[in-house]
Image 1 (cartoon, one colour):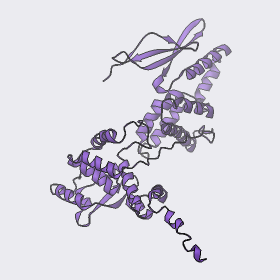
Image 2 (cartoon, helix red, strand yellow):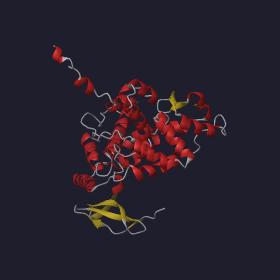
Image 3 (cartoon, rainbow, N blue to C red):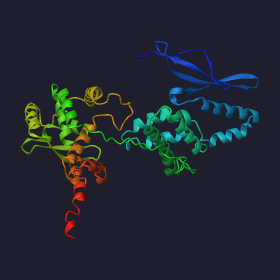
Image 4 (cartoon, rainbow, N blue to C red):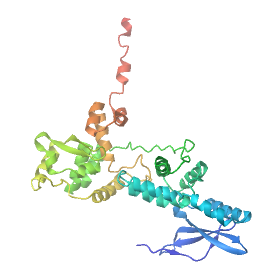
Length: 377
């Protein structure tokens, strides 16, 4: 575990009254910083910690907070009775967030991931803010700041979380105001649909890399021959394998359904030997998800991801690429689009149509021969 240390010295920034302290690791390398502001109240200097750079805190945000404090001090203290009354009326975003996460605890699959995103990114900006005073302009500023450190897809997800938190409060009739995530908040256009698939030569490279590890080889072959997702392949048990028909019953966890996949004779012989020693409910692959991911990622990075950025979703090869490879080569072979939809277990044909452009029948031959008898006219 890395040992972190916060240096005591306050380092001034270019903005008046704004400082930061460096956070260093065991090699004395700065890996983060904590921002502070200083202001004067009743002839005394006051220091206030705002937050860390890694949490999205920037100098402009510190400047905004400092200016708000100074403005309030210049206008004078609010009378105690009015202040108490106002305090009772203030509802912080954290309160709405707690309601949202409790409400969705058993409904949303990745609720803990969403909660972590809220704590790490949204809470430092808006957690203590009055829900009535969070504006669309502040949301836009939040987007702008987050673009310095986060992927565009992640920022869109954060905006969606904020909107969902307000919507649940409106639905429960505990908030009468407007959701600041409105039509004025434009989502960042992200062209990150995974279109990458492995060529036949790349498939050969991958299979050569895994052929000496039986569990990994079986996984790769099942993924390439059925197009099943990671969790689908790892769910296959002995009873799902039908050797006589070269078929396998697949569980689609995303759509909560089952469908049929097929495999060739080479894989059939491997599975035949494999299931001899298994009980009826034993899984074909006895390794966990993380083991599979870690092992394959090393191979992908070695052969297919050289020079690509870590956040290049569109072009990087990942385990899900095997599913795209299955569908892409079906299309290249001229498989009808509805057959591909069935084999992929797509609920919506629009999901399958992305592979149509790979079909060999582009229409070129039809156009070239369209008027082949024109001389007879």
